[in-house]
Image 1: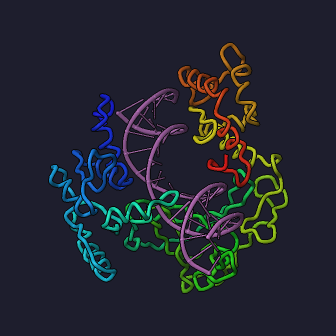
Image 2 (image 1 turned 90 degrees about the vertical axis):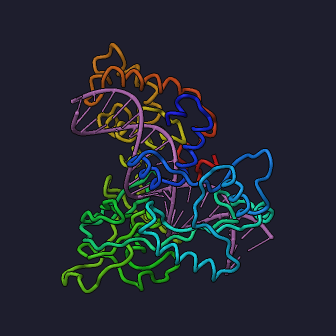
Length: 357
DNA sequence: CAGTGTTGTGGGCAAAGATC
DNA sequence: GATCTTTGCCCACAACACTG
């Protein structure tokens, strides 16, 4: 970081490389500097590092980089799995956190031929260790209304530590998921449904995402009842309908529904759309609640209505000061002209994400 | 039907900046 | 100095559309 601030591209790049190891590496690095770094790949090189992955890694070692000593070349799947199991045994004593191993095609010419999908290489594959699990109580199932009007059930859990972090919420996806079926009607959790009051096992998928794995029927209260998915929007009271062939239930309120209107606003100002700094989710909620911003156009008249010299000013709001108000107005002015794709994305049309926009 | 790409939903953490 | 909010990063998976 210090190097990056000083404009040192090499050190900045190195820190980026460390960051690519993910949040666990970054957390560990922050807790105990100095950072340690295993070189595991490369970007541009003036000449090939080798003909194989293993050869390139050896070359990096020759150049003075530290590489992970556990890497090895395997000839078949059995050898790969033996390596995976061997590393899993050593996991606790490594001195750094890992969540699995990565298998890579050794021949770099084959790597080049295999190429990439939209987000991942075809020549490398992560094999993660099974995640830690914990039992806890499902206290409630809340319904969230998204910007498209989709009603999403969220599990409220008695907070429990899973893999070092406290988990209190987990998505339940949709009504079928709670009932124990997937979108094709096939049973999940062997068809066991999820009920408020159940003891559930939770884990973090990919060591990150909280998920409910299963319910413990032996601890289910005798008086529990299957979860009844709401037939109306919990926010605006409009009918909530599920179209044939769709997974989600949608609020029919449209922009009449405050939840939809507000979530649409949040999306409008979000990073991929107008990206107005200083106007995050919390600020949108507060301005919306007071009627200062009800629709996207209101953002661009905010200074006229609540800027300097007006009776009610942003800078006098709780949590706001002169500096933050000034910064907000400047950020809004800066976004009066934006690329067309950001505008299209910002409109929040269903099925039109960043790529389509 | 498998593979792929995209969207939309959900989650967490650290750092930075600002206010309280 | 403590606290709050935002930013920016990371990740999973369900759902769906499309292709060959």
